[in-house]
Image (cartoon, rainbow, N blue to C red; front, top):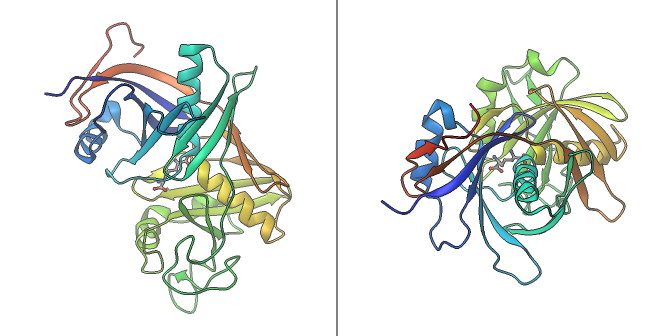
Length: 294
Ligand SMILES: N[C@@H](CCC[C@H](N)C(=O)O)C(=O)O
């Protein structure tokens, strides 16, 4: 058995996150370990954020992101807030520069405990998302689900926040849609060669929105930070909202997203520690720290 690594079970307004401390190690969290941790109710998660030693000068750490099905993700806004909270508690530092496969991002813990992550710049080109077909205008693409003459969901906006997102606009309560049924079909639709995160969004005012997300590689989640960013960018692009929006997510928590004039998207919200333990990054076998909270 490989030597164990410390982890913290956390959440970002309900998005279930494991922050794994893989510093000073050459190995990675394996897909098998992710699947095993997710199969245990106590450690069920949406994403693992594995903190590795920096690869690039000017960055503090490299963050590897795994979904609960063992696949890799390029972005995870709620998970980044958990990483910041864990590192800020350990070091007393408030600002961090990280590297992920999607690039370099900055994050900061505020005096009130909330955390902002600069999620980088959105991309709209059909090859960037990516889509299987050419679309010149990704504010609305031809895609629908349900009966051909009365689709349940249709004409999504598509955006890359480093990872692929499709946003379906709805007028009714987001809870009145069977996202558990349509989510897997849309995630794996041939339109999305790298699959996609699927969000239902109801705009409630020029600066408020309610969203529900079926996450690629994780399924229904209580919140998805990059989906919140993608939703606000897509809403502003289609004149549904302004560029500064508060979002309610299924966990009941709220996120704030601001699309700055310099094109960067800032995600702000809370993060919460639940318990700590250690695990084998190759198998996922784990144990709770004895002094850790329930
Ligand atoms: N929960 C995340 C996004 C998760 C990544 C996603 N499942 C993917 O594969 O792209 C967030 O808070 O952004």
